[in-house]
Length: 139
Picture (tube, rainbow, N blue to C red):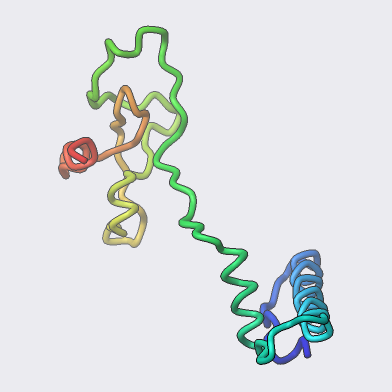
């Protein structure tokens, strides 16, 4: 029964294969227990719809993590700081622009667009010359 609707994914790491194997086996076991449970509905779900209901229950409205930038530590009295672009003080000096990354803009060589500016208050890397800084703070 696992072969009908199992996750047919290939992994290089053995532990990922074992995890999804255990997940598939537990889903089949849950379906078997569902069929043998007394007091179940007259028309029980078939295997496919049971799997889909498990998946829907696991997702349960999950929309993904929003990671806009690196956490920034501002000194006390951060209300004094405004959304102003400043040079990035890192060893490399450049980071990927968040809006360009969301809009999937890339350079001619296919690399992510990078900028050497970030917002002082948000600590989010944004292009100053392409207008990403203004669009990000407009919303």
